[in-house]
Length: 273
Image (cartoon, rainbow, N blue to C red; front, side, top):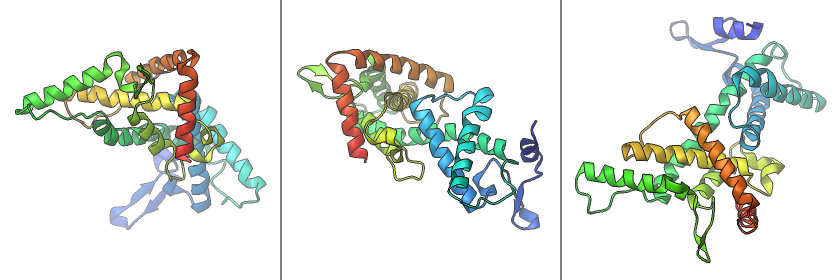
């Protein structure tokens, strides 16, 4: 175990807040441990790792990411701030570099959860996941919603937008649009709209990640008939993502649907900006 993680796990090198009777130990794997300028650096690093997750690899591997991509983001930003002559407070880097990298790795699941939070609000409205008036008992109402969710999942119908000359639009459902705009183009300091990659186009992998999380939310409705609070099943999510990405590649290669999809994603980006 390296020095900074040993400190984080043992409490050494941590900040103690509060009175003696109610002490809160703040570890170097949390933002609260760092002074303001370092917090700004780490927020920017989180935004960068989210960009990497949304555009390259949504499922970082612990054994490679902490000492790989996460550490690289920290190093690049420290160099950038030093070149800008920003005075980063001493005593934090490189002492806590690996703890900072762990913080970025942990933010991956936070990012997924933020996408899911938006999806949970949008999915039942956009997909009309409510029971008909004819369903009078609790069992009938739940069963009706389960059937709706099943129908949406079959053949990935939940991806389809409005028909164009009797041909359905792929990956064009308003729910996907609203989730992408709500997450990737938010006003947060970690919003991806600040990066050129998202300023002209919603990238395929970013859309596939949003669609995979919608798929996960619909599975919950299919199982329970309502939006039950459940943790994301990472294996299930990754499997769904890979299948949706393969489907998107097929759509992108189609002479009709490919250009149509690209034009739509350009429009979404313009709306988000």
